[in-house]
Length: 485
Image 1 (cartoon, rainbow, N blue to C red):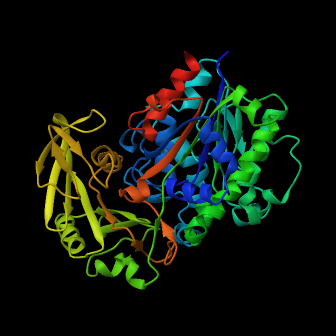
Image 2 (cartoon, rainbow, N blue to C red):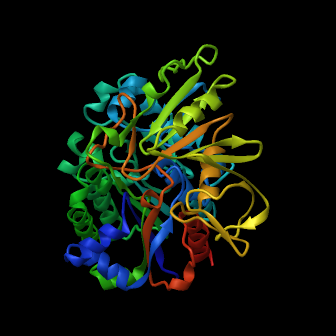
């Protein structure tokens, strides 16, 4: 009988922090899992390096241009509204907390997430193979569950009405969904408002433990562990110690099997991050203040966009931003102003059926088609200058510090209807707009640079031959093959 597969999806899991923690003896469980299989330090995630886009790609094996989740904060032209899936409490209050909560609870999975693709949960359960999702942002499955509001959320969101949401057979969304997995779970501090009503590592491991001990672990499970991200944003200098806390939770999970060796006998464990993080400088110059940069242009109020009057929409996703020009000539003006800022490494927008990139005074355009191959076997037609360390040798593209640049950038831009500009910063810098998170002296992510884009990958019982160049989008076909063959 094939082993069950469990993904431990560690938010902001980074190889360099892992090595530091290992050298200090802080992560014996992660070290054990690494020693029992294959380990890659350079798995490439998708763009933007934000959770909604990344989770959608992990579960569908597609880039955002296919699954249609462009980021955490974006403009939905079909609905003529800005969508915020939880990028900071102040930003959510600016848009309207009830509206944002609806999009997080229902819109993201049931409306915006393309129905032209299927998640791992959907594909496996349609074949009669049970699955589970513990606290994953993207969780669309075959079963229906009632959404619920725990504790004080009933008062804060008293006007919120959410239809039934869909998830797999085993399902939790913190304390926000009425599911069998929560039945019989005794109240603990990790379910309180101070612990995000169950959206934390401890509660996620509690539920995974319950499935193991009650012999209810399905053939495929994803357990989302978010605590590293929350802590690392504020205290990157404590990275090894932060990862040590995750290690202790994973150790608890392995003990629930009767020990680490028994866990190895029953499961293949896949551990990976969703994105990296880049340290941000402590001075105010480390933040690119976008609103003054576009002084004189009619910038839309995010709560209510008026396409007839507004000229530009700004949707800040930390180290990347989407900019939506609403009038003729605005794109050119936006690009001109951005290109004058030394902190910006890349500006890109749709051009015909491809993408134009500008970096400083250099520019390049590319489009899918018969042309030069990238390291992943995809072919591109390219015109212009070599930029951002990109080079072409013997008919193959090397992307330097911007891994899988073309597929990832194309995926982010073409996830949108209509024209959109994306802009990212060099390492050490972050974007700023009023009300959105600020990371001076901390860490952030979102960009195409390798510091945000490379994550470690561990697969127990596997060999290095499984992936020559691992990418997050390639994990779904790997998992499907393992489970169904």
